[in-house]
Structure formats: structure tokens, C-alpha cells
Length: 115
Length: 117
Image (cartoon, rainbow over all chains, first blue to last red; front, side, top):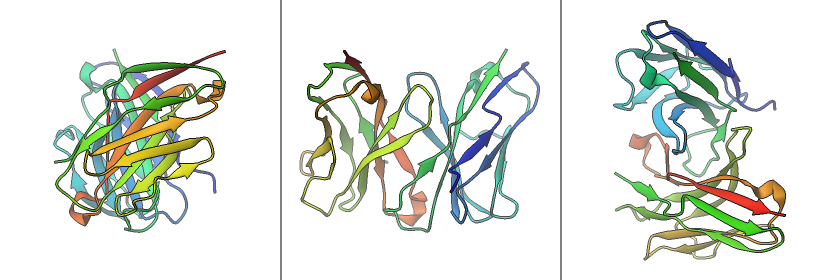
């Protein structure tokens, strides 16, 4: 069990560029979550997958954001035409099964800076 | 919608002493889960302790314990014998059992804990 892995850990990009983050959940975890965290704030829910199906998207996820989990394993989060307001830590998390009591495990996050 | 409030942006404690972090939440549900997560400077969120709302007994994990007051919707974290490694941002989080919410976590704003040697 290698934990939840995220790549890259840090990304600096110019405004208007596209960026993509990858998340590898804990093996066999069928639920995968994306959160966004800005400095001094708690994480905010963006979206989640049950296997390959994206079941819910927050209103925070504008049309410039897209997430996929094509084979129910790793996931990607793409941000198109980045804006300075997109600067944040993007956290991926995973859990096993549907039971709400199951622990959600977090990755170390991908920090995005838009200049 | 559920909300979680942590009214203490910063707290400090002397090494070996005890500190309590506060958390209140708002929900209309009767069954749910509450968590405390720790986020050290490395940024990885680590689960500290969890509490099921249907359990009256307060959860305990080694030096960490909670005071769960369901009627008051309060969920505080007590850290005993504080250690330098306890220094981190602590987040209180709520999780609904409803599948329509995807069992997502709703976080508070966090409390930055400093441990003084």
C-alpha cells in the first residue's frame, strides 16, 4: 500500500495555459475525490468518482475544469485557460467502498501557482 | 447543507501540556461521522480520530480524545502530553451518511497549533 500519490507536487504556469494533475489512489479504492485548498482555509469539495463514473461535481468546478477516471484507477484533473484565482493546492483522496464510515485517505497535494 | 466551524484560528501549548481545539457543526441529520484531521507542513492530511454520531462514548486514540456533545453539536479535540510533532493545522470535518452527498467531507477553517518547547 503506497498511499495516494499525486503528480506533479508543484506547478507554476502562466495565466491562460492549461495544466493537468494526476492522482493515483490507494489500490482497490473505488472512490476518488478531488478537493481544492487555498492558504489558511479548509479543503473544499470539487468532485468525486465511484469507479469510473463521476457522480457529483461542485459548483466550484467551472467549465474550465474537467476530471476523468477512465478505467476506475488513476484520475486526472485538467484546468484550461488558467486564471490567477486557480492558484491553490489540489488534493486527491480515496476510500474503499460506499460506507460513510470508511476512512478517506489524502495525497500530499498538487500546488498550483498561476502567474 | 452542513457547515463546520472552528472558532480558534490559532492555538499554542507548551510541550507536555494539554490543549483543546474546538469545533461546532450544523446539521439536520441524526446519523453522521465526525473527524479530526492533521495537516503538518508537508501538507498531507492525516486522520487523527473519528467519531460516529450514534455512539455516545467519546473516541480515544492514544493521546488524542474527543468530547462529543451531540445535542450541542460540538466536537472538540483534546491533545494530552503535547509533543513538538503535534504542531500542525488541525481540521474538523463532517461526513454525511447519505449517498447523494457522495459521503464527502465538509471541513472547518482549521486551527493552527503551535507547540512550544
